Length: 359
Image 1 (cartoon, rainbow, N blue to C red):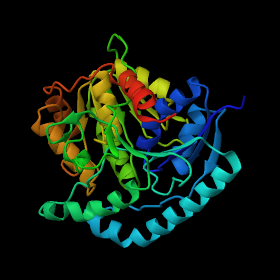
Image 2: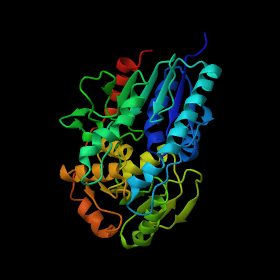
Image 3: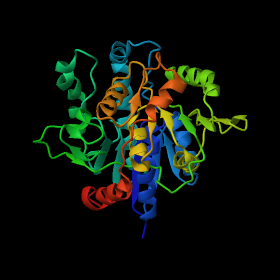
Image 4: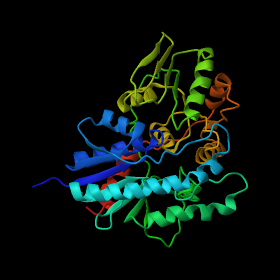
C-alpha cells in the first residue's frame, strides 16, 4: 500500500515558521506519512538541514522587505501588489504539486496560496488580526479582511495557542476571531525545544533572528556589548546558510547557526536568554520555562505588541533596540519569572492529529 502523503508549505520569514513546523512535520513522518516540503531561502535550508532525507520543492518567496527605520507599515503596504503576485504563483505551484504527488492533505504554515479545492487544506497561524501601530486600532478589522478572505480557502485554520480571555493565552488579541466562524480551532502551543533537566552551566544565550536588515543591525549591537557581561556566553546569529563557529573563547562562543538539537541543549543550560519576541520564540520559552530579555524588531508591530503584553503580564522584560543596554537590561530581565507551559507540545500534536485533521 502506498504511503499517505502531505504537502507541507512553510513561510520563509526568519526561521520561526520553519522551527515551529518541525514538530508537526516529524509528527507526520512518525505516523508513516510521505512529506513533501515547500519553502525557500533560509527556512528551506533550515528544514533541509534538520530533515536531510525529506523531499523539497522551492516555492515563490514573498520577498517582504523590512525598513531600517520605523516606517514599516507604509513600506509593507507598498509591497502588497508583489505579495499578491507571489501568492498567485504559489497557488499555481500548488496545483502542479497536487498533479505530481497527489497529496492526501495540504498543510500551510502561513502560505496563503498553498491550498487546493479538491484536497483538504489546513492553515497554521497565531495571527488572525494584525497588531496595529499606535493610534490605528480602529483599522484592525479592515486590516484583517485579507486574512479572512484567504482563510476561507482552507478547511481549518489551526491557531497555535490555547484560548484565553482576550483571544489566545500567549498571542492575546492577535488570535481572536469571529465567534460565528467554525473555521478556526485553537490547538495549543508547540515547540521544537524540549524541556530537559540541566545544570545551568551557561550564563547567557543570545539568539539573533528575523528579517534583514534588522537582524544584522541587532547582531552588531549585541557583539559590541556582549564582552562586558561576565560569565559564559553563547551567541547564535540565525544564519542557516553557514554552520561556522566565528568565535571560540573560553567565555564567549559565536555561531552562525546551530541545529535544533544543539539549540535545545543551550536553552536548557542557559540561565538567561536574549532574543526577538517572535511568537515561535515565545512558545519555546513557555515550553522550557526560561527567563528572557526581549528586543523587538523596530517597526514590527507584532513583536512590539507581544513584548508589551509580556511586560504588562510581568512575564518578561523588554527593551527597544535603540535603547538597549545589554548588561543593565539582562539584570532587569532576571527579576521577571517567565511563563511555564511544560509538556504543551505533546498535547498540541495530539490535538492536531487526533481532533483537527480529518485523516
